[in-house]
Amino acid sequence: MFRGSRSTFSSARRIAIAASVFAFISITATVATATSLIKVSLAEQTRAAGAIVRGRVTDIRTRATDTGIVYTYAEIAVDEVLRGTELVDPGSPLVVRQIGGATDSTVFPVEGAARYVIGQEYLLFLVPDYDGDEPGWFTHGMHLGVYSVERDRGEITRYVRQQDN
Image (tube, rainbow, N blue to C red):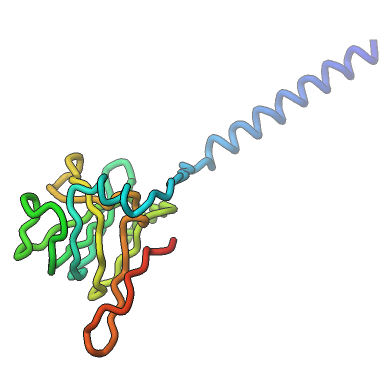
């Protein structure tokens, strides 16, 4: 009889511990996100892009949705359109939208997201963004579609480097 009581106590204790752990995880759980990117060749990237442009970032802003997802918007002053001349006006800025970023109240980091710097010149492989809250573009392959343009003092292009993440 003593063994049965002990067994019942142990089972009740295990259930209570399991319930406590489940409750703790439920209360403290956060959304986990992962990003998987497949590096493609320059030729494949070129074929997939709706537009390829060279330009400078003039503005960066972020905005959170009602669900807490943050998007970063980079405004690009287009200097040259290498592909997609029917879609991009070199005289007009375009907006590149990407998931991830931070607002005053929300941080939403996304591995693989491109990082832009105001004033920096980039070569961008772009795909039309039909799902955004405003017309725009996103980069093909997130940071893999972003190349930094580095120039020497004579404004001659020294190299173009794919952005690291």
